Image 1 (tube, rainbow, N blue to C red):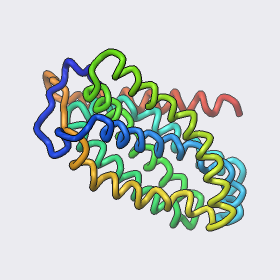
Image 2 (cartoon, rainbow, N blue to C red):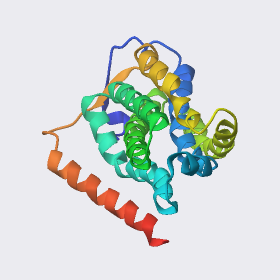
Image 3 (cartoon, rainbow, N blue to C red):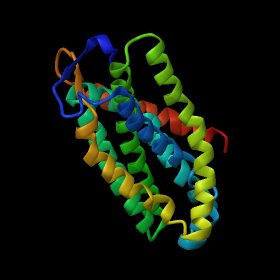
Length: 232
C-alpha cells in the first residue's frame, strides 16, 4: 500500500462521484470482511452437528479465515498497487462471494475449511486496496483523519454484529446462511465498483518480485499460524 503522493489516478466512471459515496463503499467492504471473522462463533455447534466435525477441526473454521487474511495482506496491497486498486477490489469481492457460496454448500469439514481459507484470501485483496483508495480520496488532514476514524471503528462494531448475526441466522434459517448472505452483497459490490470507485495504481519501479512476495507471504502465514496454535 503506497502513500497517496506516490499514486497516479486514472480517468474512471467513478472518479466524479462524491467522496462520501466512495467512503461508504469501502467501509461496506471493510465491514463485511471483519464481520466474517466472528460470524461463525455462535454457529459452530450447529456446524459441528451438521457436518460431524471434531472439536479440533472445528477451530480451523475460524483460524483458516483469519490466518489467510492476515498472511496475504501485504501481498494484496502490492498486487493492488501494481495492477490497480479498483480491479483488485472487484476480484476480491468475486472471490469472497464464490467462497461464501461454497462454504454454505460444504458437505464436509474439509470443504468448509478450504472455502473459509479462500474467503480469507478474497478479504486480503479487498482490505488494502480499499484503504489505499480511501487515503487517495481524502486530502491529508482533518478530512482523512475523520474518514480513517470511521474506517477503523467499523472493525470493532463488525465483530459484535458478526456474533449476533451469526447466532440469529444459525437459529432461524440454518448455519449455511451465515455464508450465503455474503453472496449477493459481494456480487453486487463487484458489479458496482466501476461506477463508484476511481482506478489508481502506485508508481512502481522494476518488475514484480514474485519470489519475494511468495516467501514473505509464506513466512507471515507460518508466523500467524504458529502464534494461533501456541495457545493449544
